[in-house]
Structures are given as C-alpha cells and as structure tokens.
Length: 442
Image (cartoon, rainbow, N blue to C red; front, side, top):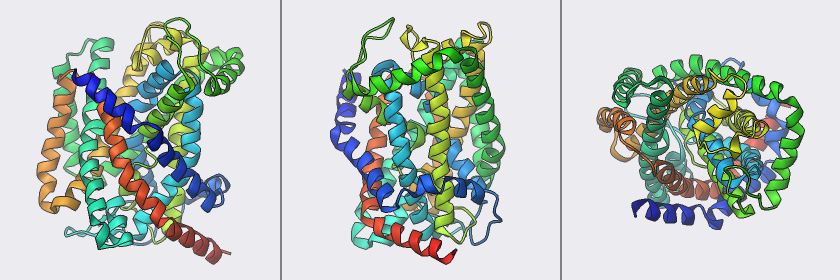
C-alpha cells in the first residue's frame, strides 16, 4: 500500500510539469549563455590547473571532486540499469539531453553560489541555492530559501545516504557473503571518521579517490565494449530509435512507451548528475576563487563527466551485451554485463566499484545536508546532524528499502523546484557576470 502511494506521488512530481521545468530551465540558460558549455568545455578543463586565488576553504579542483564524489554513485551503475530496464534503450538518449542542457544549469548554479556566498560563524565560506535565493532575490523570498534547505536536508538522507548504504550492503552480501550488519558498522565508522574533519577532510578524500574510481570503472567498461565492438553501432542505433518510438518487449524486458523512456531518462539523469537540484553549488561555494565564472566553468564539467561519459559507457555496456533484456535489475544487471567478459569476476568487480561510488556519495552528500541544516538552525546543528547522518548510514544498510529509489526521486523533485525558480529569476545576473568576465579577459 505504502509503495503504491509513494509510486503515485513520484509519478506526479516527475510528470510533464517537472520535465518542462528541468529541461526548460536548462534550455533557457543554454540559449542565454549562447551555448557556452559546449563552446567553453576545453576552457573549463584548463581552469582545473590554474592557481587558485580568492577566499575559500578548498581548491577549485577539490570542489569539483567533492561535487563529483556526491554525483558519481549508484545512479551511474544501478540508476542507468533501472532507466534502461524500465524505459528501454531510448532512456539513455533522454539522459543525454538532460545532461547537455544540465551543463548550463550546473554552470549557472556555481556562478550564483560563488557570487552570493557568505562567511559563517566558524569563518568558512558557505553558499548554495538557499544563499543565492536569500541574497539575490531578497528577504521576501526567504520562504523559498527555507523550502530548499528543508528539502535538501531531507533529500540527503534519501539520495545521498540510505539509498547508497542499502545498495552497498545488498551487493556486498550477494557478491562476498558479507552480512548487512558488518557492512553497516564498517560504513558508519568510516563515514564518521571522515566527517570529523569537515569539508577539508571530505575534499581530500574526494580528490584522491574520485579520479581513481572513475578511471577504474571506465577501463572496465572499455574492456566490455572492446570485446563487443561489433555490436556498438547497432546499440547506438537502438538508442536513437527507441527514444522516439515504443520499445518492443524482448527477453525479460516488458516493453515501454516513449513517455516512459523520457520520464526514466530525465529522472535517472537528474538523479545521477544532479543538475538542477542545487546540490553541487554548495560544494563549489567553498572553492578558493575570486571568479564566479571560472568556478562555474569548472562546475559544468561535473555533468559532462558523470552523464555524458560514465553513464553513457554503462548504458552501452548493458546494450551490447543484451544484459538489459535479462531478468536482472539494477546493479545486478550491470554485473551481468561484465560477467559476459569475466564470468567469475564481473559481479565482484561491479560490487567493488559500487562500494567506492556509494561511499564517496555518502560523504559528499553529508556536506550538502549539513549546510542546509546550518542555514536553518545555525552552526550548533552541525554535530547533531553528523550523528544523525552516521545513524542513517547504519539504518540504510540494515533495513530493506524497497521503495527507497522512489522516495529519493520524489525528494529530488521537491528539492529541485525552489532551485529552478531561483535560476530562472536570477538568470540575468548569470548572463551579465558571464559577459563581463569574458570581456575583461580579451
């Protein structure tokens, strides 16, 4: 009964209105920025290696790695598999569309976050949607800032905590026979140790672990794709055809209408890259930079790397191996794809990668939720929130969370709405700052 209610709510919040809001905001920003994310992609990568300047707590590179630590998670493995398993291959096309316009969204979020950030009682730079709503739109919009902070604080326990912990515990039990209780205790302990050091500790972990785990996973996908290189053209064709026509039932796949492909592609795309949610700019606001535009150019790389690179390779791996037509779902579907190349190692490889992805997501999202809580209740809430976060990890790993994905999707939508409204209203500021900064560089 509860699962049906949550499913109905989720179907409503991710209905046509939300699709228009997310894609429409991204299109508006893309056009207003004159397709800057595409034109300045190489420029963004160059900024990663520039010497930082200005106030802040972590380097611009560390800010990107922190945001990627939160975005590269189970959505890249289980989320992509779920999207294709329900919506068909065409869902991957709509994930691409979400990412292409999402790069402009992510750029705008970071520009506003740095431009309107504040210094808190502990001397740290803090920012994000709640601050650019408060300082950019004025006091009469404080209710909207408060709504974002409430939804962000709650969404963290879904998308960034219990969902990740539950998936880790499940996959460790199935692949290595590790009891959920053991996984829960170990994860909670390590998360707690990292949180003691705050943003600098989180950023240090992300800067070393994120590049390693991303490259490791991409190499694994490449091995599967090379082994099935002759199937790649047909898989790409299947993606485009299924994006605009219903997908017929085949194997364990029940078939899907175009609208289902769109909804699953957009929902899982946003779940994966978080463009429009307003989460990533919270990390970028802590960067040592004196230029909102430079940090925005770095921020948009997160969406490119997460969806257009990692999610794409996951999707192609599922299609060329026909794993998407089997009975397996979620992360197990991805594991079955790798097992076609390495029968005795495929599931264990995916399990290890998923654990790394999920752990960094839990740590990254703890910072997002903590900043939202601080905005609402002040710095005194930091320690209690961290304790609750560690407890959430333990609960997520030990309890069955069958509807956790649906609840996380719903909270994502509720979190995105205040942020998207602010992005549209403050878009003239983004356009002006961008024009002025690039003009000053000539």
